Image 1 (spheres, rainbow, N blue to C red):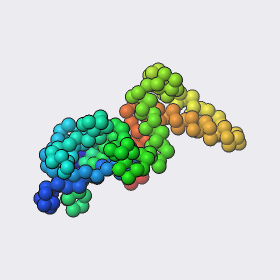
Image 2: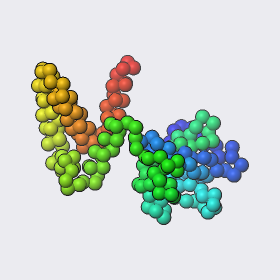
Image 3: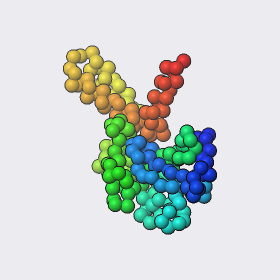
Image 4: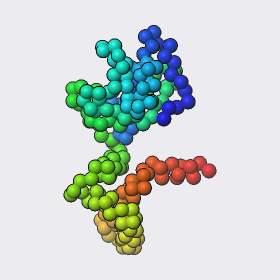
Length: 202
């Protein structure tokens, strides 16, 4: 969660270092705050991003009034040891204006697969009655694995023919159900890619 470098608060006259907050899922920059040692310690201890408010002159946990907390995922220290990169998951809009970010950007990923994985995770954690994805999770791991097998067979069958539309549609079905299976097992596609990357470097 916290890389090996230690932040040097003494490099800043007021003991406050910039803390850039990035959405861990979408990689969008959400906001900029300031932290002292106490704010960093509280963030690490409680898992909710806490700053030192220069206007309030006290510790301030983002979301303490709105409920839009920033759940900590990772903290990194920059090369000069005087700036923090906070990777977090926002519980709602981040800016006090009601915008997703303090730069009025929509907090959506440019990576469609990442966005799809996020939707799948939401359907798992917050089941919806009319959601096909939620119904898969409700049926359990065996049913999900069975669906992956069925879709894989369909891809093999269509690969032997020359119908591009059917082949691509069955391939999409396979990929979708595989992402559901990964989520059901507690993994993401990035975990699989890490294995492939490790093999590639050997």
